[in-house]
Length: 459
Image (cartoon, rainbow, N blue to C red; front, side, top):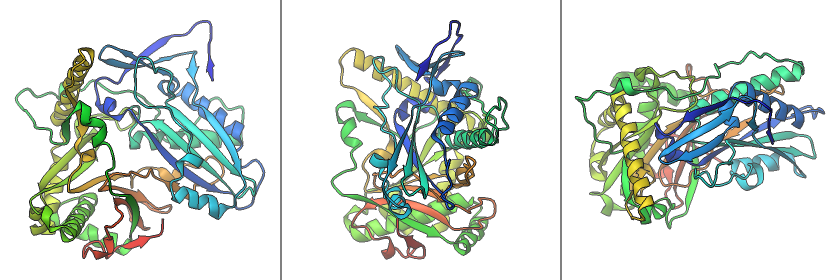
C-alpha cells in the first residue's frame, strides 16, 4: 500500500558506492512459531502489519522507499510522508504442525514464502518492494510460519537479523499496549552506508581474486547450478566437538570459525579428489563473506553492508597434501587481508567495472560481467557464510521464540552455511551448531575421514 500526504520531504540514499549492485536478488527465510496452547489471537495479522509498517515508517524509511536508476547511479528514494509499505499476505492451510514443519525443512518456498518479482534494479522496474512477508496459519491452530523475502542490496545478514529483532521487539510491545508511539528496540535502527574515502591508501594496490570477469553472453550460464543435482546435508557440530575445535584453534592461533572453515575445506577437497583423481591439478577454491566493519571503523548498526568477499585458491593436490594447521593459516590470511584499504580497493574495483558494464550496454557491446568467483564453476569449492552470531532465535513477537528458522537453500556446489540451533550461544558453545552443506547428490560426506565425525541430521 502506498500513502501520500500534502507535504513530503524527499531523501536519497545511494547504493552505487558499495557492493550492493552485485546483490540485486531477494533472500528468503522461514520462521516457525509453535502455538502449544492453541490460543486465539496467535500472531494476529493486523498486529503484524501494524508493527511492520510502524517500524519502517518510523525507523527504516528506506525500506519503505523506491529504487531509482539514473545513469550509473542507483538510489533509494524515500520520503517523510509517503511510503511504499512492505506487503504482508496471509494464508490458512489444512495441515498439522509436523506437516508444515516438513515443508519448512524441505525449503518449500513456493508454499511458504511470498513471491518476489525480479530483484534486478532497472529504470523500468522502480516499484519492486524492499521487504515482503507471508504469514501461514494452520486450521489446527498449532503454529504460524513467517516467510520473509528481502532485497539483498539493502541489507546483509547482520543488518537483516537486527531488523528482524527490532521488528519482533516492536511487535511484542504493541501486543502488550496497542497505543504505544515510542519503543525500546534492542539494536539502534540506523541506516546508511558511510563515506569510506578516508580508507584509501594510494600507495597500496590489490588484486581481487574473489571476483571473476565473465563474458557477458556467458554470465547467465555461469549462474546455473550445473548438470548434477545439488542436495543439502546438515552436519551437526556437538558441544564437545566445538570445544575440541576451539582448543585446536587456540593452538593454531586462529578463530573458531577459521578452524571450522579449514576442516570443511580440507574434508570436501579430499572427498572430491577421492571420487575423481583426475582433478588433482585443478582448482580448489575457498571463499567467504567477511565483515570488516570494526577494522574499517564502520558502525555495525548500519544496514547497508560493507561486507566483501574474500578467497584463497590452490590446486586440489596441494590442499590434499597440506596439514590442517597450514590450511587454517590460508583461511586466516584470506580473511585477515580485509583491512580498510582493501575494503576501499574492492569497492572501487566494483564501481569501475560497473561503469564499464554500463558503457558496454549503452553501446550494444558484449563485454565482461563481474561475478563473485564462488558462483563460477570449479572442481572443488568451499564457500562459507557464518550466521552463528546473529540474533536469529531472539525474534519473539510476543508469542515466544521460534521453534526453528530455515536458512535459504543455496543450490550451488560447495555452498556452506554455519547456522545456530535454537539454544546456541556463540560465546559459550552451549548447544549444537549446524552446517548446511550443498553438494552433488552422489557426494557422501560420511566417506570423508574429517567430516564423518559430525552427525548428519535429517533435514
